[in-house]
Image (cartoon, rainbow, N blue to C red; front, top):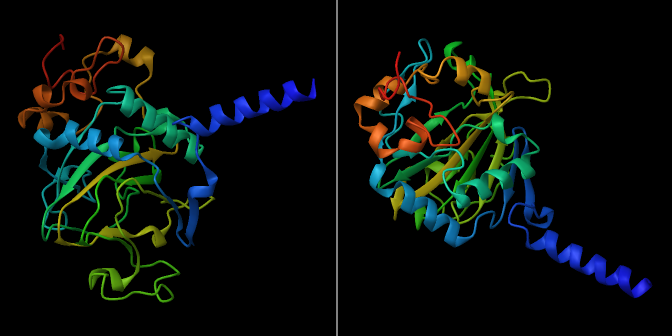
Length: 290
C-alpha cells in the first residue's frame, strides 16, 4: 500500500510538472515591490515564441496609442513599433498560453484582452507610459487594466529593454556596457526569448500606481518581438446574452478604424469571430444586419 501511494504521488507530480499550463514557482523571481513586478524565466518555449511570431508576421500594422482625453486610438511618435491582435483561443497554442497566464496571475481568462504581438525594428521604441486608463471610454468594458503580462518572443542583441523609470530599484540595479543608455535611466529588464514579465498597474486597494510607468527602450542591434496580455479588474469578454441580443454591436471603439485597415480579412477570428466565439467587430465588418 505504501509503495502504491509513492507510485501515485510520482505520477501525479510528473503530470503536474509537465503540464504546460501549470506555473513553476522556482522560475519566478520578484523584481520590485514598487511597482509590483515579477519575472518568469522560460515562461514560453522557443517553439511557442516562434509560433506566435508566425501568426503575426504578415498582419502587422503601425502601433497606435490611446488619446488621454477621448480614448480614441491615434498615431504618435511616442510609439513607433508595429503590431496586431490575435483572437482569443485562436488555436491550441494560444489557448494553452492564455490558460498558463491565468494560472500564474490568479486572474480569470475572461478578464484578459486579446493578446497583442509587437515588433520593434532598429531604433523603434515606446516611450514611458501607463497601462491603466486616463479616460472613461476605455474603462467601460472591464474597468482598469490591473496587470500586464509581457512575453519576450526573441532575444535582442542590444537595446529593447523594458524600463521602469519610477521603480524603487532604479538606483541599485548594476549595469555595464551591455545595457543601453535608455536602460540606465530606470530599473530595466532585458528581453530574453521565452521570458515573461508580470507587473501590476494598480495598488492592492485598486488605485492607480504611478510607479508602474514603463516603456520599451529603442532597439540598437537586432529586432524585438513581444506578446502582451492586458488583464482587467473584471471580465473583458462580452456576455453571451449581450451577444445573442445585439450581435451587430461593435465591442471596441476602434473597430471601424481596424475595418478600414483591412483587419476583417487579416484578423477574422478576432474581428468577425468563429463558430464558437463571436467576433468583436461584426458591425464594422458588415457581416450581420444592423
